Image (tube, rainbow, N blue to C red; front, side, top):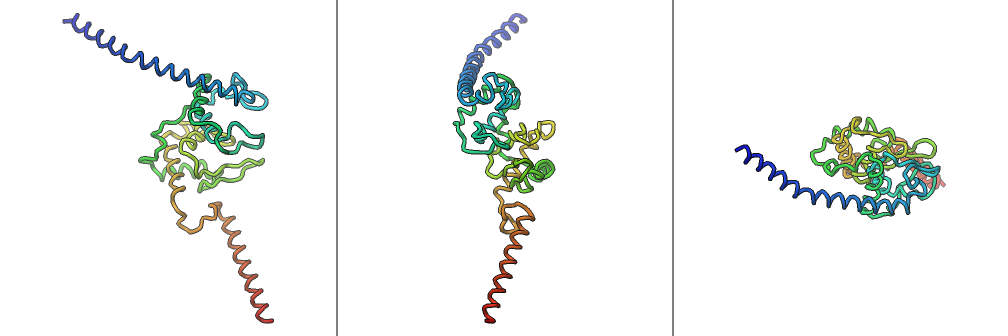
Length: 248
């Protein structure tokens, strides 16, 4: 009986190993091919600033430890490759296909591991807690990005960009990697579930009309007060001209 049990276990284990080894080898080969494609793209488009070994140069920082998430954010939003030197890299039309971006991210991550591209489950907004997302955003983000995510000015020519129209994966990656002047919110600061709630809240703001009427860019009391002054003064000047013309 013992011999039969041992034989059965060995046979089951052997069959499982034979079934999984080809799949694992195939996945490994695909990953190696993707990283090789990314290495070629990196050498042609990125190495002049970041160095062939990713250690950085006088023209660009090191990429050791930035991970796939940072590459996907920077290249996927068009910030990289950088068009020109300035206070910060602006978002612009994307220069690569999604396949090429994935290859670049895989190559950088293969050289030095770092934050990974987030799972799809945190990007869909399903079962999100909008109230908690709004609270987290107001506490951690609104001082730079504005309470409505409209963006705002920073020091030395830098700025916090508006968050409307930004894809959920790039919002998550920005929180995870802290690009430009933005602080890093790792999973100990804000958990993946809480990041998902923040993203869902921003998408809610983006799709919900302003209940107070015209939003005026959602830039707050300065723009609203300026609009009132311009409209009120314009009306006063118009009435004054009309009364003067009528009296004459």
